[in-house]
Length: 421
Image (cartoon, rainbow, N blue to C red; front, top):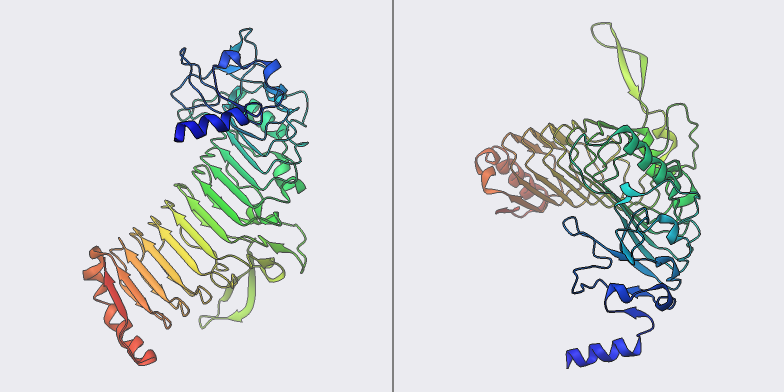
């Protein structure tokens, strides 16, 4: 019955769907197609099935699919093959596909410099765009290769209606200039995956509608600072400016060289206040932070695999009034998690071997900890309702669990829920 229904559906929509041999997919048969399904022929030729270990052949004339709305794993090539099928399409062949909603480009390192910047920008229906380069070994890119991918990326200007953008394995050393413009004004979801050569992050703080941001594998980044917010040193900052105005979820993963995270330029001011020894104290002021609203809708932050990161920005958990969940994994250089008064629900900490203190998190209701052998001091969790500990925490936690239990009975008149998992 299932096969019968499938054949019926294919017969009804034969003008919109392609199932068959690649060699039969010629320009004259493609004008009404909306979707092209990956198929294998007797000659092991695949259409739109681009895996790292599979040699892909594609039909000529993709540009004639004027009604195509979804194109997954579009393999980029130079289009120089004279055969019916070839190993990839030129970027220019995308120009006529004006109905595209979902587009995934792979093997972008093979793309040649385009004659136009309008390959993508005119696609007013495009909502999801994935740009992917092929993975190579470390240090295997020539200066010419790097320069070429940067130039091609600069030309792939997306339409302003784009909502979901993924950048995968880009090996250039700088992002395109359009990252800091209104081209991404409608963007809701942004993912940077294995972008390992760029030392700075783009100014994502200025994207007005961004809700989800994931940065994974940014190995060259050692510092995240004002450039991430979009405020560089010397830039004027106005009272009405909001950074990350709609961001709800922020994820950092696999950033082995990241050491410093701050949102604003810090100015060192010699204060008039003097200590007991008569030496003027040096105070730090975030002169921009006082005039800029930061992350007003942030709900969740996840950090994993950032072993050199020393601390989190002071504004995170202080000025971010909506923050509910903070997850920290494999932050071995982090010594303390303290004084985050607005973090209101869950604190999850795992495999942070250098962590020594958790203090003054007055609104946290759930604490989960494992793999923190040096965590010897935990206090000031007035709202804590549930504590979950890994089995490896039993010995060290005996120093502070009794104090938490006593505090909970005093404040709430009942026992604290403590679990070992």
